[in-house]
Image (cartoon, rainbow, N blue to C red; front, side, top):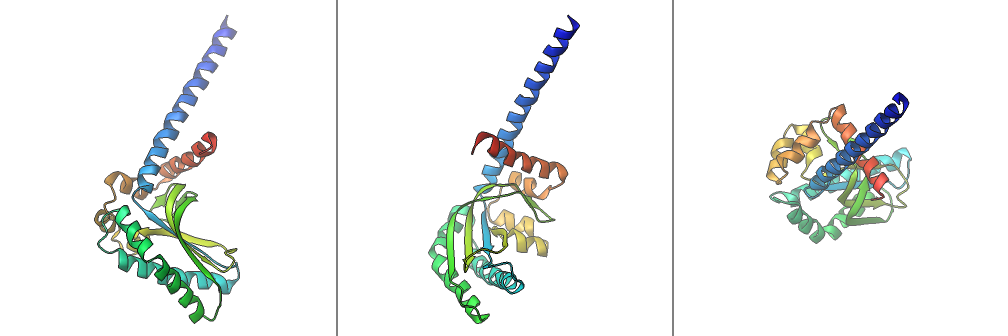
Length: 205
């Protein structure tokens, strides 16, 4: 009798654990999707992993990020920022290609504004959960090298370096919930972010 009761207790515990995991995953995914609806990522992919190509990637990153942020000043929503970037997408591609040529390379450059999957990323002062985000994607040459990614709207990476991230986020219409999610990036938050990736793998999303 005791054995049966113990087995039932194990079964109930497993079911409760599964139910909590489902609720945790659904809630975490909802938060990530809300955040994804408020930001645009930047993804620059180097031609190769050579030291020269990696340095070129960073040079292109700086030029593209600086120009994009100039155009995005005053944009108060992701939708407005997306419209601006799509209008200037060819300009950004040409700017990146011009930078490549100035550095003495003849790589072809591609630029896309497209949804893209990202892993969880900790930037030190803030962290972003993995998931699908609209992405300004710049590919140099064959695009076979390590990449660099951050956020072009709002300009969280440059704003974090200057200590004005909260101001930049507010001006871009980022919700307090989303800002709190990414800036309270202690181990518990990073664990929550990882749960989003596990949930998506589990559900096949």
